[in-house]
Length: 425
Image (cartoon, rainbow, N blue to C red; front, side, top):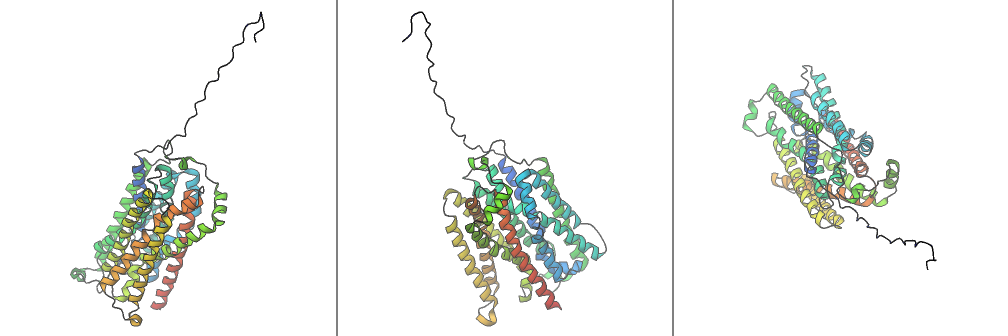
């Protein structure tokens, strides 16, 4: 009650506080341009890496390469993953733009080294090996950054599809080498049934190989120029809550990964079959030549196995975008199919034991099915990795598993290198 003679004290009226709802993610149309540039970079890296395997017979004649050289040219890919953890740190600390520009500059330098017109074949071979090594150093970025890019730029219902496109275009580039090389570069006599092969000579084959090298250098330079002109690290606003959330530090991320038994088991399930198959595909012509498969046929087998895997992989990823929680089931189906296809291929090659016919149809079918089942599992694996160890940064997670994959690829190529060297001696 107010006392007489004193002014009334106004009672403050409580004002309701308006709570802001968490802002929904915002996506930008430019995300497709960023995805296109990164995918083209991955395509070019895969194309350069697989330049020599599909034309190994022609390269031996034109440049004096041995079986050791051909295997080593492919081997530079997994060797290039030695500084993988540096690129993961760079992507985590400096963002995509710095990492992509460094990667593309290495590719331009590597592609340029392969084109240096030196008459001395020994020096030329060393320059080609150096160029392949520099291109291999670009591998950690183009193979690891796809989930990081999709989380940074795309909404959750587009993330698996973006991851599939960004990761599988690198495989599609390797498939392009199976198509471009044997069609542009003629085979030496006795390795192809083409009627015009008998008219080819060493200089003509060398000129055609150099034309391929110059074309690849021009393509890589164009992609580097486009990325230099426009490739932002991230959008102004994140597309989702996950993209804006705080991630673990570099050191804590490794501790979390190495202590997560489920992640380690999934990583081995990815690294062993995909690493072995990638190395096997890179020297497919070298492997199939003893069973009288021509350079062109080996190229078509490798091409369709990878292209089929890319198409099915993108379709599977789009399916996974709409139906969450089925990643494990999809992987079990794909790996079961790969097991059956590889068993079929092995049994048909052991004709002296199994007495199964080794025909062109069975060779094509078994190899293509194997490639479809394995390559299409890559984006599904990446999404499962990210979900399993969140909030570990995507680049670190995928960097660890691709590093393991390249270790197994290197083991296979190391074995094949000494196997063929021993046969020659």
